[in-house]
Length: 400
Image 1 (cartoon, one colour):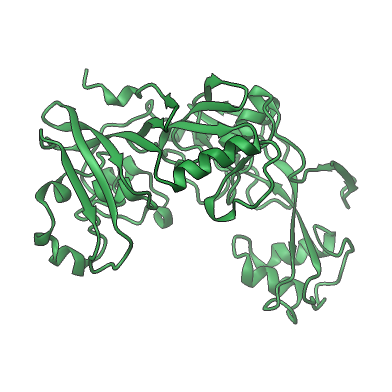
Image 2: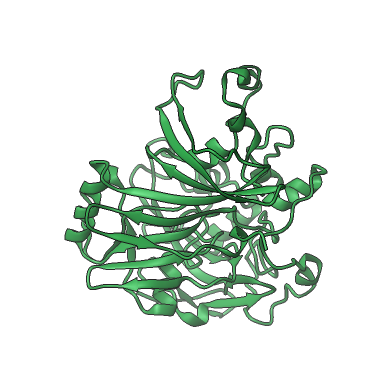
């Protein structure tokens, strides 16, 4: 539902809510990146018990620190922040469970301008090739710049909902992703187009009947023999995670490795390939780990490289730029970046300026790197008792 409101500046604004699907004209393509044209959006939340008793301005200043205090004062005074659909004074004290609306000029982070290509379209299953840097579903500041949003806008597909095993009781009336890929990972993504098919996939996954394969580009010459590794009973005291690695090829500098997870753990492949040297005390115990486990990280991910580790999430660094700043230059997995030219061209030609927006006149939101690449990790195959789905290999998987 779209709603119109008159601002003090007599500017007519069309407010969007999650009910408004993305459309093809919402996207702007510049310098190899897919941007979202900034749009007006209503964020809705309800007052938590720990928020109750605070003034509306203090609540936003303390809980949502992405904008300054003065912005929130102006937002309340102008009606951009409302309580139960009504304007309130800046001194208003909120009560538990009240509805709070924050009307913002929303800027989404850019992603790589790569197609979300449909691989197979069956009556109850859709498979796609997910590009790196694009999240699967709306999360954080991403809404339209997601696999779900792009499929809606460019392929006219119904809204997609991620099927999470621990919330499988949610109604699945349209389409569900039966698994997920991290934002920086590319490759095969399977979508069930009915609740019954989604439930069938879920049962097979939970029963351990589904096998999956990834390929990764790692540093060094990976061992020629098949290598299996299980992590468990370590100082981390986490659940065990097992993966089988097989070298596909090598050029003496990098190796293409087939990765077959036996268990399913968060960031399992990235951590295993990148040696889990996350803490100094674990590094001291590295002698107990196989040598291959310490020497073959994913070749363009600096997050887990112990020697050059950088917190790129807080420093605003992509994988390749973190490597460059660490003195360890890596070849890029994407077209040459033109960051300086892009900044000069970060103009307002394609969208209107909002006088209260803290991101305008820039197209991208503050704090996001303009030169982000995807990881060299790609899902190529999922198979079950009576089905197989595959995805083509990416360009970086060739040593030519």
